Structure formats: C-alpha cells, structure tokens
Length: 226
Image 1 (cartoon, rainbow, N blue to C red):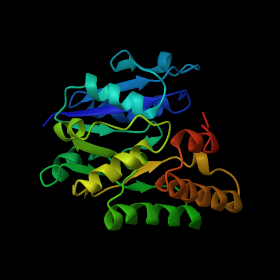
Image 2: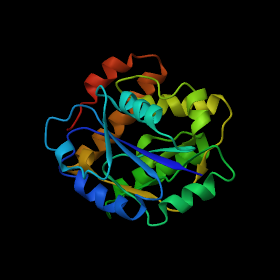
Image 3: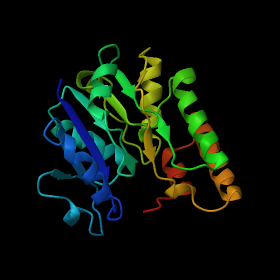
Image 4: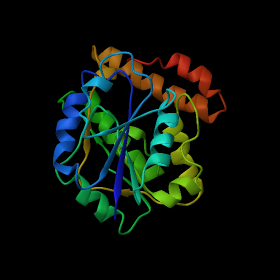
C-alpha cells in the first residue's frame, strides 16, 4: 500500500519547518506533496529540496485536488499544515484501510481549556454518530474512491464538509484511527467569550450552507486568518 500525503499550504512560514521535521522519519516510506496556493511570505523557500512542492490556484479544494491528480499513492491523505501527527501515523492508516475505504484520525487540542475540550469531543463524536469528518481530522481515502466521488467540490469553503456529506449519501462508512491529530488553536485565540462566539458562528455557517446559502457568501463571513 503506497500512501501519498497531500498538504495544501498558503502563507505558512511560521509552521512549515515544524511539519517538515515531523515528516522526516517517514519521508522515504510514502509520497509527500506540498501544494502551494500562491504564498506571499517565505513558505516555499523554507521547504527542503527533498520534498516535492507543487503550485496551484489558491483554495484548499483546488490545491488538494491538484495534489491528488499529481500523486501516485493507493491511499491519499490530506493533511493540514498546522497538524501534529502521531508517531505511528502510517501504520494506523494501513490498519484502518484493511477494513474501510475512508478513514481519519480525529482531532485533539493541546490545552486544558474546557471549551476546546468540548469542541474536540463533539468534533470526534460527529464522526461516529453522523459520519461527518472535517479536513483538520486527517482524511485519508482509497485513491479510486476519491476520483470516483469527483474529488473535493471546488468551493471557497465547506469543501471537506460537502465531500463528507457526499460519502455519507453513498453509504460509505468512515474508519477512525487509534490516535488523534493535534491541531493548533490559532483560530480560537482570545477569551472564552470569543471562543464561544466563533464556535457558534461555525455551527451557524454550516446550518446556512445546508439550507442552500452560497459558499461564496459564507467564505466572506468566515475570513481567512493567514
């Protein structure tokens, strides 16, 4: 089983070195593709020559789809740049893919903040109960299935949510790896009041999307922080 790791990047100079350090031990055991969406900082220049860097139009859907098209793996993993992966990363993917066509790691935050712990719990519960997985939970999928599903829908936001909904409608179950991916809290900075407001907003925007509100308008509300 060959695994391709596809990492969409945009203005990630603060985090890019740490992710490369994490990938060093597995770089000869899988294919690793960074897909840049036109970074205006030093992100690309900070990536070691031993990794492949591709360029595509900005937008996670565009970048991840392009990376998938250029990849050669039997299994495709879509990884966010602010992720911290478990040491048994590849082994856990292989284990899940023995029984499933799609899997994920779930999410965790390195914090004792009760609101973030609640966010973590409900995000992972959503996978088990509603079969909905988001991009920061480390989606991995059988290559053929990814292309059969039409790849990620090209939307400015909600591409992972819609893709997950498409899988659910097709009756495809999601396997969950033993360990979690730690992700940064950079969007959840500030007081508990600010955190609560953001969590409410995220749920509200998903509700609007389900009701048919245009993704282009939602993306204007949910501003890019980079």
